[in-house]
Length: 247
View 1 (cartoon, rainbow, N blue to C red):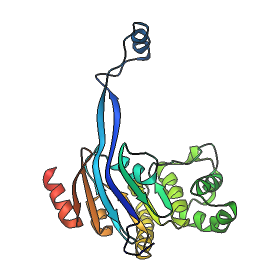
View 2: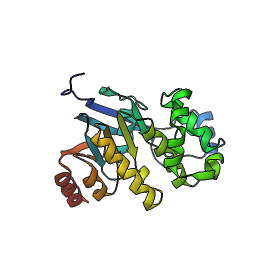
View 3: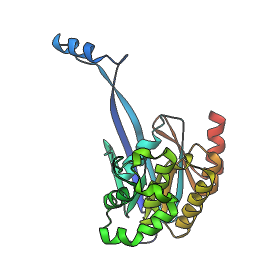
View 4: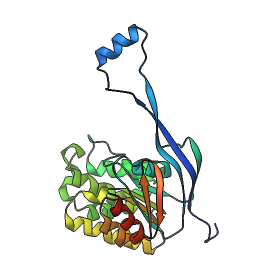
C-alpha cells in the first residue's frame, strides 16, 4: 500500500434505525394490540448522515459531540460491527476495538480465560497469546484477580483487562470509546503513555472522549458530530473552541 494512501476512508456514511413512536408499551399491551391487529408504529432515525473522512498512518482523531450525536455508532461502523445503509467503508489494517466495556468477555470465566477468549476474537492464535500473556497480565496490574471470574470485577478492572489485551496485540488501528473514563489516575496515565507510543509508531487511533483536554493532548484531528451529521472536521483547538461555543 502506498504510504500516501489512507488506511481508513469513509464516504457518505449513513446509518438508519427504526424507533417506536410514543411511549413504549408493556408486554401485555403489545400482546393485546397484536391480537387486535394493531401494529407498533415506527419512525426513522438517522444515527449517521453523510459522514466522510480519511485517516492516514499516525493519525489520532478524536470524536466529540453531545450524547446521542452518533459517536459510538460511527466507531462501530469503522470496526465493522454495523453496516451502513449508504456509503462505503475502506479499512486497511488490524483493528483493536475498545468500543463497549466488557465486549468480547464472558463474565463467568476468569480474567486469565478471558485473555485467551478476547485475544482469539481479535484474531490471535493460542501460541501468540501464550507469548504475550505475561505482558498483558503485568500491564493490567490485576494481580491475583486474574484468576477470579469477571463477575467479581469492578468496571475499572474490566477496563484494565480490555485495554491491556487490545494494546498488547499490536493493532494497526486502535478504537477507544470512553474507556479512559473509568479506573484510577495511575492506570489512566499508563494508558495515555501507551497511546502516545502507538501514535509515534504509526498506529491510527480513533477515540471518543468528553474530556476536551484529553482530545487536545492526543489528537491531530477532531471530528464534531451533531445529531448524526458531520458538523466540523479539522484542527483540534479550532474544532473544540467552536464546539464549546455551541453548548
